[in-house]
Structure formats: structure tokens, C-alpha cells
Length: 320
Ligand code: ADP
Image (cartoon, rainbow, N blue to C red; front, side, top):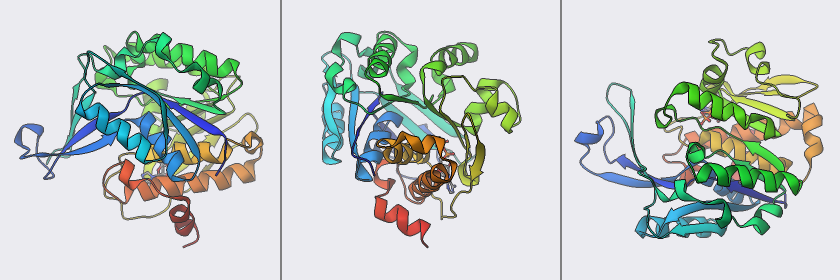
């Protein structure tokens, strides 16, 4: 695991998950609080693996914001990029897997603090010290967070950071699918490394086959690595010079929340000190095997943050 700093920018929120499974939100007798938010998960994934991570985002000045800032700190992630909004509350999500197998989501975002992060509130010194800058907030869509996103990307790029992007598409949050596609693709070309899931690939390309031609239709000349994650089917990688796939590990999956973030955190923690891995297929395959192992372990426990592995756990699954 590398020693360079990985800065992850975006939202941190609390998922309220029903205490019993297979019910609708309205029927839930009570809720458990599960901290999450993809960019925060990535920062904690890096720290759990022994890497250096910082999180940048805005929280509400309320009990939930205090709880989340505490979780960042407890997990050894630098929190000096966190700001608190004096008016708005921390983002909350209510999530359930109903008996009919459908996921039901409700968000408290009207607006939540994460959406109100202003460009002038960014800790620029922290961003400039990032070897890797990772972003992919679901609040990219709204001002002022959108401008903060764009400014942070620009500052990181100018400082020579490697830019890593995960669109984290949550389609119901967008005004329309067209706007989602357009906005996501408008920041595509700034990234050096992009990770999409198979569903995102289908959505962004408008094609319904997940083959190499579909993935490569999203290629842009500045890109160094495009990853497509396929859940229990592992992951695919594309670079300028080579492409291929790496199988998943078999585990007893109970909850896939955070698998993609665990995968991204693992990848970034391995390339942060040595980007030549991106040009070296055998070494890249080793790294992706490690990232697949981290993703798999995350599915074998409930929740996202509690399920993120240490390096020892990941290596023991690989060597099993
Ligand atoms: P996302 O959470 O972004 O949709 P995935 O669910 O594809 O991403 O998960 C990321 C990675 O985690 C996958 O590429 C795979 O290596 C691993 N993973 C996810 N689900 C499983 C599973 N059910 N069994 C084994 N590995 C998994």
C-alpha cells in the first residue's frame, strides 16, 4: 500500500436501513444507521488498507454531521477538508430491499449540506498535496457543489495529481436521463482513471451489450485506465495498449453495498506511488486481483464501512 496522499471529494451521508429485511420503508419497525456515501467510503477503504487518505465534503452542523466527522477521524482519514454548513442538514438516505426484490430509496436532500459546498470553501492546500484526487459526487448536478467539483478537479490537475472518477450514477436524483448522461460525459475527459459499473456502461453508451466495443466507445485520448466492474463476474480493464478481464473471488455475499468503493480504494492505494503500473499489464492484473478481493470481502459483511477489508484480510482471500 502506497504512502502518497489520496484525496476523495464528495458526499458523506447516513443510510437508514430497516431493522428487518424484506419490508417497504413505510412498514419498517425501525432503522439502523449505516454511514456511507461513495467518496467517503473510498477514503476509508484506502485508510483501512494502510494508505493515506483525506476526505473533502460538507456536512450539516447537526448530530449526524458530528457522527460522520467522528467516523472519518476514527478510521484514520484526514478530515481537514470537511466543512460544516450552518443552515442545511446532513444528507440522509432511507434504503430498503423490499420483499418483491426491488430496492426502494428516499433521500433527504432539500438541499442537504453536501450540495452547498462552495468553491471558496475548498481546502486548496490539501487538494494540491494529493497524489491521487478521486471524485464522483452525486451532488455534481447542483450548484454550488458543481462549481466546487470543477474547481477541485482543476486545482488537482494543475498540481499534477492523477484524477480518478466514478460517476456513481443514481438516476432518480437527476432531472432527466439525458441530463445525467450529458453532465457525466462533460467531465469524462478530465479523468485519468475511470471506473464504471456494467449498468453505468449500458446507460452512458445507450447500448445494451457489455462488450469491448461498448466500453471502448467511451474511451478518450487522455484516459490512462478505464475499468468496468461486473459484480460477481469480476472486472474488465482497458488502457491505450491492452485490455482484458480479471475474475472475481467466490464469497458468501450478503450485502453488496460499498463493493465498488472498496474496489476503487484498493486500486488507488496500489497505484498512488507508482503509476507505471498502468502501463504494465501483468502488474496491473495483480493490482486488479487485489481490488477484486477487496470488493468481494466487502460483499460478505453487512454495510459498507464496517465491511471494508484490511490488507491482511485481502491477502488471505487471495492466498486461500
Ligand atoms: P459497484 O458497487 O460499483 O456496482 P460491483 O458491484 O461490480 O461495483 O463491485 C465491484 C467489485 O467487487 C467487482 O468488480 C468484484 O470484483 C467485487 N464483487 C462485487 N460483487 C461481488 C460478488 N457478489 N462476489 C464476488 N465479488 C464481488
